[in-house]
Amino acid sequence: MRYIALPDQTVRRLSFYLAMEEYIARTRTGEDCFFMWQVNPTVIFGRNQLMENEINMDYVRSHGIEYYRRKSGGGCVYADFSNIMFSYITDDFNVSFTFDRYLQLIAHTLNKLGVKAQASGRNDITVEGKKVSGNAFYRVGGRSIVHGTMLFDTNLENLVLSITPSNEKLITKGVESVRKRVTNLKEYLDIDIEEFKQFMRSSLCDSEECLPPDDIARIGEIEQEYLKEEWILGNNPRYTLVRRGYGSAGEIEARIEIKNGIVKALNLMGDYFPVGEIDAFLHRFREVPFTREAFDRVLDEAPIENYIHRLDREAFTRILFNDPT
Image 1 (cartoon, rainbow, N blue to C red):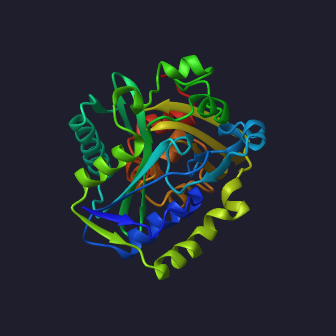
Image 2 (tube, one colour; image 1 turned 180 degrees about the horizontal axis):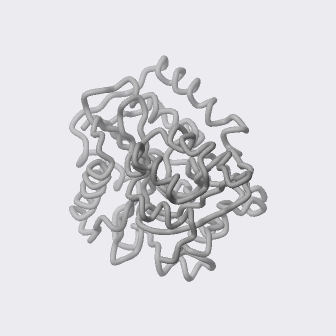
Image 3 (cartoon, rainbow, N blue to C red; image 1 turned 135 degrees about the vertical axis):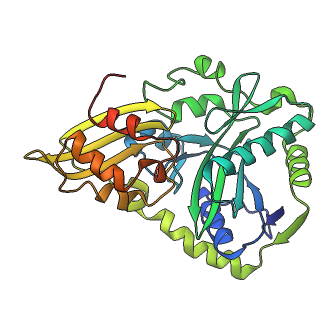
């Protein structure tokens, strides 16, 4: 695997590193790539999440914490300079295989340091049952990107107070409750963060490339997409009906606009992982009667599994039609 390095130690905005992932995915093919990055206190939320549902805006603004939307699914996370972000870019196309391969690789490498880490759930790495890493997935230019956190010595109070998760999630309120679920790697290591980064880099990668100034400039151009207000704020769709569910695919909130029993718009919010062209999929339900039979006909032609990771037809229709579990 090739390590992608930057030519200087400048601390950049989180949006730059998201753009860097895209640029590498589009320009470096045929070999797995990896890089690590750190940011000043920042909240990053998933592509399909409603910002106001995920972020404690009063706290974030008053403490100078930045916030950005990414193009992958998954939930809202907090990062600071004592957290390390990992980015992995590969040609692998199967989302389950890619996730499993990456999570197992990182867990195995942590075990080399004596940390008893293991892949857990749909996208986490845990140590003694506590989460140290959460990860998300998306595709760009025919390649797959997995990126995520690695909590080393993160400020857990800022983490808790910056993020406002829903009631269904395990992390609900208070620093103490979060400490029962989340931990820092520092608790298990006798090396500092720079030594840890060097170990991960040398263990995972056997070659290196330093990006030249021209590449940095092009990444800066892509970054501008992430800085647009309409992208950060996202789409707050009209709706007449809301349905919510939580399962193996993650959190799903369906917002449905209906007129005279006919669907005018269907939007899916939440921390799920899209694996296909989700907008095109949702467009199929426009002008369709809001009945299970009509939705089944659409799903016969466009199976939900082709668009959302780990969401099957039964779970999808149960959420939409409010069926008992």
